[in-house]
Length: 201
Image (cartoon, rainbow, N blue to C red; front, side, top):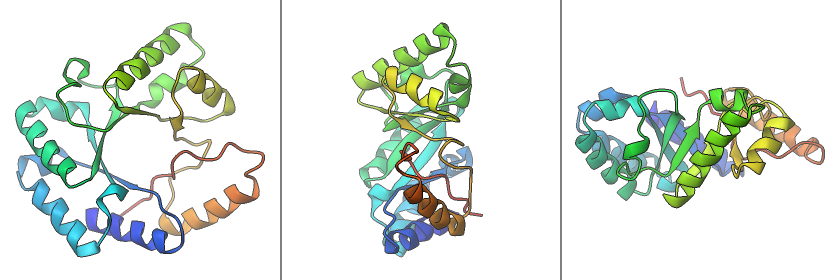
């Protein structure tokens, strides 16, 4: 699946769409202790610039073996690949370990976005954004469905977002049509901060 996603990213680049592709990693790949070799082989085989590959982990993976996960993530990032923590805030709390885990971004779970109207939830998001800034991490809000979400998140310091407001999950052939429609209505609709996730299988 990783190689297929990288090749799809290259095909989109040939059509002028230069956006990174995100791929979810499973704990099984870390347990195999050859994740670095797999990624390096795929990048070499496809010719994809590493900066266009983003790998996503989850908080629960830290339960496996913190030191081993950190070691492998350092190796991966040394290739020039970005790493983000997906669904942050929903599972095992890794806040106390964030300064040790070599990642580039936190992806806030949609549970935060769905309750943006509550002062307590906004306070939590603001605290996460401030913490991420201190750690030099990007913050990506998931589950954005309307302009009110965008306004609230911007006020809280979060400017990178994804969700149904921009587009639902789609396959590669649908992305081009989606981009054309975004260009047509670009003057009336907030431009996407990230492409919708491409389905790679």
